[in-house]
Length: 178
Image 1 (cartoon, rainbow, N blue to C red):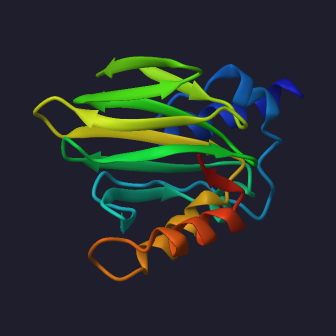
Image 2 (cartoon, helix red, strand yellow; image 1 turned 90 degrees about the horizontal axis):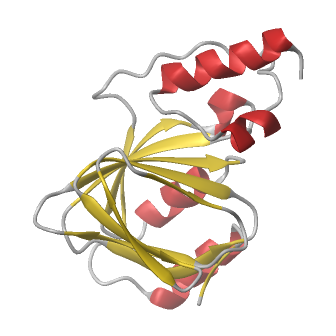
Image 3 (cartoon, rainbow, N blue to C red; image 1 turned 90 degrees about the vertical axis):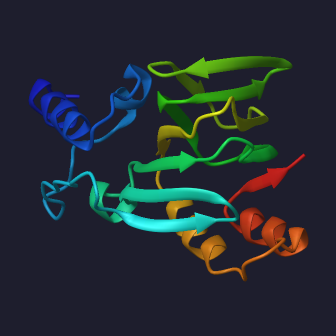
């Protein structure tokens, strides 16, 4: 990657409000000419309730040429996602406030404000907000695409989810529950 392209990618990452692991940065191709700078203010983003997971989609694949997407999660204690595995994307979670328990590779890790975890594709994992405070998390995934799945899941009727329907939707995006 050319130095100028690397610097453009770093600038885009900083503008998005989160630092991405160097591994992810190394895989990002230069931002294409059809993409432009996008400033996302604190209150902006597409608000979604994805089966109880409160999200604000800050950057989509349309914004980044399909390279990655960024989502802010802000959830109450007890909210979590059952064990699952991704075939297509790597994830980076950076905890901004609160506490979140992550389980992967047979180990459980308690993350607090300022902590970050990288979950590569193919590694089963789960997470749950613990403690007494809401947790705010910046979630980046590489490449993009899950944000489209989140939109689809957010359209499901309120109330207890039909897990067969959820699994079918997630399966179309390469995510399976274990």
